[in-house]
Image 1: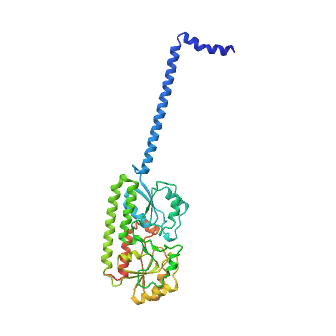
Image 2: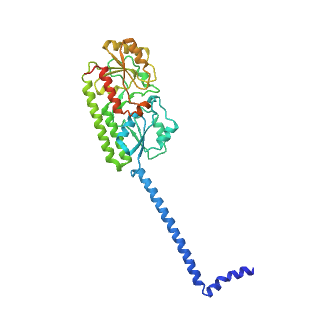
Length: 356
């Protein structure tokens, strides 16, 4: 008890003996140190908040030094996006190489990849019917979704020939893995392909306006190449002896045929994995014989069973028309592009339609 009392009076004695001034100076120094520490901490917090706010602004457009992350569903869209972005984006193909596009269903890892992207590029609900449901579950509110069918007039999934008796319209409208009433293969019309490039460009500019001029310039350069190829198609296909495409696959080349004034018949409208009816095969055989068709076309990544049957029974030969939905791993590794695919298609059409 005495010890506590003595201690309690010590500050008083110290103040009375002139120690007060020393104690006050010491307290002031301690206070200054504390204030300095608080100011430093506040400054650090301000810097952190500034950096964080800067990151937030990047989501609204400013992306200094950061590449866009773009996820594209089909190979064609992947190639378009690469050409528009140049080195300003990392573009990934959602569809694994070698996988047929119509049978693709996204896995959890695919959904995660879409969720972490800046831009998601797809063809539209008729080509990727799963996209709408997946996008509803994506929590990334800053994700820009690019529907490349925007501004393009879709045509119905019908053969453009006069006689369509070998197709069942009711079956067409109730397909499970098909495209429904409208044909989504819009990119095979090269004028549509240029519009799709513009749509992708606009999405990139919206997300990354600081690199606007780069995206515009790259898009114009690429569209010029597409336009030149379109002109070659028109010139070559205007000289053909035969103007009818017989396709032993699913209904994919209607836009191409319409663009270049060709008549187009396919074995069936549904998924490439489907089988045509005997009536459909007989109808094609009759047309091949009637028109003196020498070449039948088949599509990529699918065994050409129907084309082989038709060739065997009619004596026609088989050529490939590539729909550019997807490519094999080998083709991806050797640098195949959408334009190189369409150039190969033009060579096949030149031979198959007997053009000059």
